[in-house]
Image 1 (cartoon, each protein chain N blue to C red):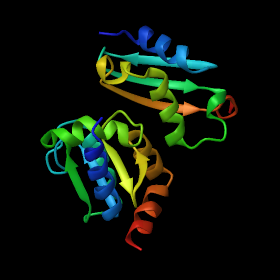
Image 2 (spheres, rainbow over the protein chains, first blue to last red):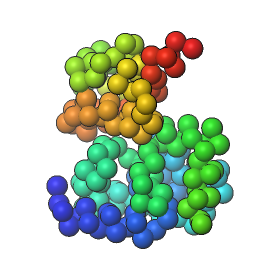
Image 3 (cartoon, one colour):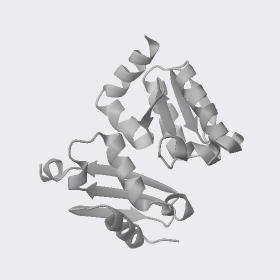
Length: 107
Length: 77
């Protein structure tokens, strides 16, 4: 665990309202779960968010699991809080709650 | 590679489960988990409990775990 890397993650998720850590990019996801996460955001009408490709950032790849005690990718952060991975995002979307969360991030 | 049965045992060793089903191909797994430990917790915290039970095996052996978590009351419905 690298404290510097954790500080950088904290900075990223607190300075940006919506951050998705994923494998690949929203246009070219490298993993089905990451692709699903990007699709959920798209379905919520979110176009303006920070997507971090963890495959292109070894420091984040190695350390993100320690930041919020969450061992897998993707990870969605809204206003600095971990919302969850693709299972939770899909579930929240189906309940109509993801749409509210992203609205709250714009405010 | 772990079998679904292995993953089931790993989770049960770290978390009290009243019902658990695991399917998977050795890398990606899907699980349905019912535990009294989930009562009063949000989905995020419930999934974190499962990850905690798996500990270092998550990553080293299990690449991805897709899960549905229920409290015993929710499961009974």
